Length: 227
Image (cartoon, rainbow, N blue to C red):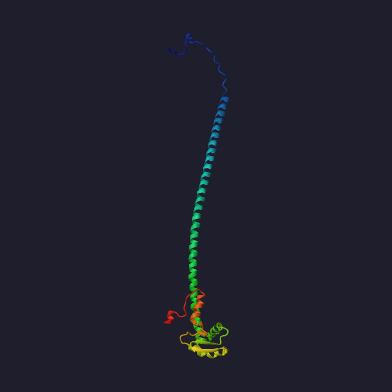
């Protein structure tokens, strides 16, 4: 290889072609460069807008799916908790109803017993101040006997007999009555016998029948009273 400082010898040149330089328009070159830059910027902006739109769409879809899933889980939780709460409330309501029913029974029983005790005290007071209170009992007992009964034995407490003997004989003058004093009887009661039939009009018996109709079993004389 030869080194040439400035010129190439002709014998070493194979072919020659003429080169013509066209006129250079600086303004056109600048405009073309600006258009290219603008197109590239527009394309880049378009691509960025597409990327942003895709990102926004994906974010919206993800958020919607997350919201739906959260709502579904919340609905399942509420439904589950609601069924548990309803079941617990039903059990609690049934328990409260049973307790209320039991309390009502206790209260009703206590009220009846209290009413019976008050009635017992009132009756005792009435019998102590009004010995004639047994007169309707004698009248009812004699009415229970047969219509053709002509005679009867009436047993009364001695104090009641002293007060009622004349009154009873006058009211039932059509009957042959035998009035007997019986100290074993409680004041306010009587026993009437006629033709083999006995009508128990004792205070204890009448009291037991009255309280039995209320579902109670209470004697007229309490143990403390007997003592």
